[in-house]
Image (cartoon, rainbow, N blue to C red; front, side):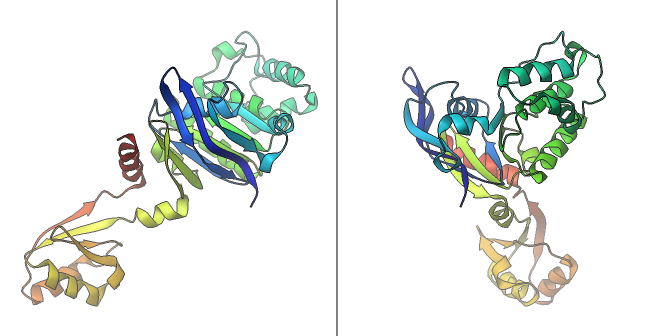
Length: 299
């Protein structure tokens, strides 16, 4: 297994508060790792710590299976708390200046702007860019030097719906091109459209790591059926549905898979003199799962 990032009990303390508290996580090569947490959960502090912008109080971290840190940093691009841009310059000028600072190859600057959809901005100054354009320029700067690993802190925060879609497509295209991406966000519905694995943080603690496939298995849409005899209703249901999809919770019949013909199910119950007094959908979305786990982790 190739690990791009590994942390071991990483802690960052300010005064007497552990803003990041004993976080041990792994990011594997080729993943889009969604770092999920509420505002103030410790996401940005964690990112600043692994990027060397602030020293850890305790614990360790390493990149690329333990590659020497200065070499690993050259393989890592980042966007933290918004891009640092010269607003009186054009996109091209910003990229070229940053390229010189990193002593990277300048000939790819126009290609980077094309990658993020800013190749046609010409002499337009950054001060006249929309927030989405500034964020895309920030990602272009993070791509200077062709890094293998991108660390992005809330890149979709504040964007309008069009900007969010454009950012999502940009990140997915970078992933298809072979980039490993670590992206923090509190916009859960959008992360769900991109991430292949998640880390959930609350109160500075890592609550859980879970793959997108595991999340899909957990968050199957459920149908809740209220009857006068849930035990007999369950016996009827398993004649029409897989037994492992049928359960009883708090005297309610729960079906944890889509029901193609709800009428056939209720008719079968009526035939057994079972009264169906209510049918509803249970909100078992990924967003609700994240919220529940974050609340549990904050206790």
